[in-house]
Length: 253
Image 1: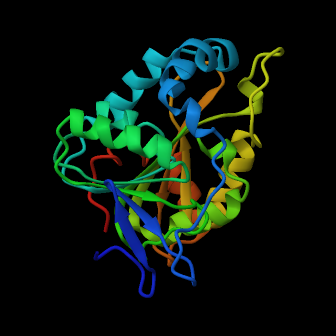
Image 2 (image 1 turned 180 degrees about the vertical axis):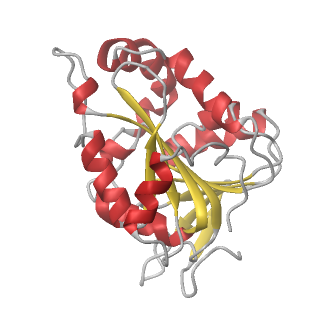
């Protein structure tokens, strides 16, 4: 597999790729959702998490994804925190999709969903977002929906993201932020404010731009990875003059 780092051992079982440890055993991860709940995950999101925790709309969330990804064709895209594969509802079928999640149970459902939507080019990995098995400069686009708050090592993840994205590559994210949460809602995970997220992404060479979507507690934002010769001043200036127009469609260079 061309995207996998040298010396990384993987094994394929029932459509999923698993990483092997130094003893040639499958690496184990502790998913935040027990496998017995995987089959009702989407129902929980639609009927409980979105209306009661996010004070938002699951339907609107999917509509936003469709709007953002409909114009994008024939790109290598990585989704971190694939879950049950709902991005299949928004992506064009000519995308080259790689999904990563620590839950094999959710990825099995994702595999069925991508098959349902007739995607010919998908690879699904049981792996950790903060230690990805991919070579540098492997992906044109990356996306993380409703998962970033569960990552215990966010800075390490962003550093990894900057490694696996190609220069000029675009990252799209949706995540709850504390300033948008209603008073009585309790959302699991470690939440960072928009300003804290911006500082972290800029630290690793990303221009950061929030999207103009309102959906309860959720922040939707872009990050674009710049070449190392760009100074932070230039990155901020680029964002301030509205340089994000067309980024999802543009070709990284």
